[in-house]
Image 1 (cartoon, one colour):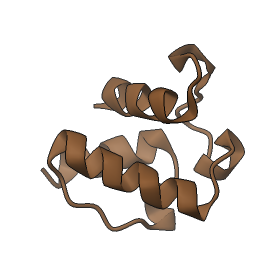
Image 2 (spheres, rainbow, N blue to C red):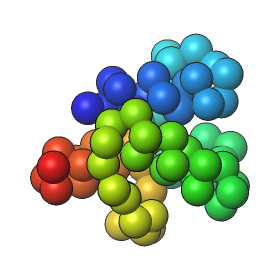
Image 3 (cartoon, rainbow, N blue to C red):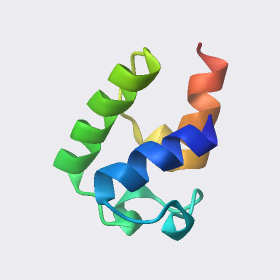
Length: 71
C-alpha cells in the first residue's frame, strides 16, 4: 500500500518516488490543503476507497496504515 501511495504522490508532484519520505508530514512534502484534497480524491479514485482527511494520518506511513486497517 505504501508503495502505491508513494507512486501516486510522486506522479502528483512530478518528482521521483525516491525523493518522497513516507514519514514526513504532507506539509513538509510541499503540499497545502488544496493539494491534499486533490491528492485524496486521486487516491480514492485509484484505490477505490473513501477517505476523510485528518491530521491522524498526515504522512504516507499513517495513511497507508489507515487504508489497510479500514479496507
